[in-house]
Image 1 (cartoon, rainbow over the protein chains, first blue to last red):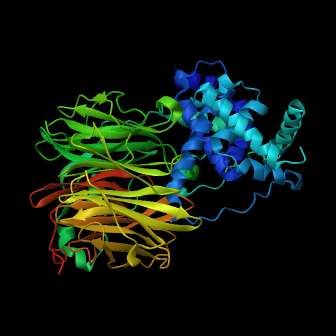
Image 2 (cartoon, chains in turn orange, cyan):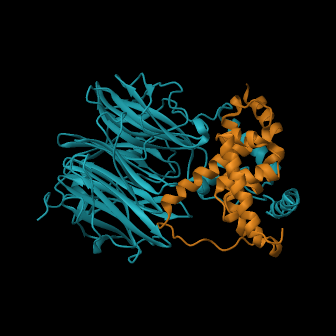
Image 3 (tube, chains in turn blue, brown):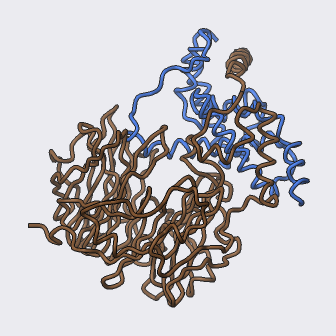
Length: 160
Length: 463
């Protein structure tokens, strides 16, 4: 595909999903908007690179798949930096509304994979099978993640 | 009841996510990043995508960053500035002045330096092949992105040495697309083996994993299936060793191999919440340094073996107590050297020495005038010497090389004048001459191989 056509097709398919991706990745990684934006940028670069392999069916899901994989790998990488860069957990993001503090902390208490699966299921309506495909794990694993995540939130959020 | 909880949870989560600030103008990037994101800075989300596509289309619409074959090689370049394809306004890579390293400076030549606008490149492995040296290079593309570790979109490349000492890139097609190459070694039968980390876009399971490729001639490479995905890995005269950490079971596992493809589990040990920090392979054994986390405290756990089969855990010792972070370990002849961070001494690179890999004592602390936050220092063994590349951590993850040093006794370190922001990743010893591989990291890093005849360094033996 010629470069201009390729760029046009890519832009048409993905440009509407950028803001949503930033928000989603921000929550998955614990609330840091700056890192969420960086991950989203990286996601789009990766997406462009693999544009030729995209089947064109669900660009939003495809972007989220790439972004979530990046987020999971980024966590593994930061593990090695622990201690070298200080261990303290950063301050609570300024965008957290008072009424969201309980939910924010409860979500942060989940592993990223569990948090991501929960968001994909509850907010986006993806089935367990679809989430399994996106994250390349067994459907039973997703079921387990969702069960644990909901049990955790049910216990942590007494006002829901 | 459950449906009611699910419904209220959805409402709460939807409201919560909607309050994440909308992506506005991107944060002001560092200078090198700015150069690659000129149209994005200051643009909104829609503008971001337009600009992104436009930038990516600059290079004929293809974003593969495989070297174009335009490696600038000079077998006898006395100044790396003459061998670099970078514009003249790039910082000079002339060796920085160093009185103690004058003789080393005179014995240094840059034999390969290859960069490409929009990429940063690094030599990660060097080995003697059937017809000269073979180098593993990783080419990172696009911008430096703190959240993902500094660079993105890796591609592997292989360079080969010609009889005249020059280096040229090998056409390996798409074999190493999406591969961050690591070490390169020779199997007992003579075949070359290069290890790589497969990018998430190309890996089964969507997680970074590892792979290995073999070649008889350095040109045709075939992917093989290692019996064990590798973690931190080192190679030495006694074979290969790697260590992995299982975050679920919180166990360190150590594997050994004779051919770097078939791995045997040799040792496991629960370490709690932790991480693998460093692996070394020397003429008299192997050392693995893990780390146990307890809240904000880190404590090294050191394991050593003389044969790779029987492993011992070092007893607790004052020199490597809580707050000591070992980032690299390497053999120094029959002994061992480790470097890292002493949290009680910010602003220095800490170093340790051991005769057996189990009992460690503190050696010289390397200081610099710069203000440092962390020191992810790396060691490379070079015959009877060890070369240290020190880095400064900043911006949460990005590092900037701050110097290279060399030791012959593990006690004292002398500056090694390799040039501006140099870092050494690998070495190949050829008699009195050594090839060092790494990169000069300027605004965009250039893969670099230095030919070096070491001068007298230290005592060469510990008193």
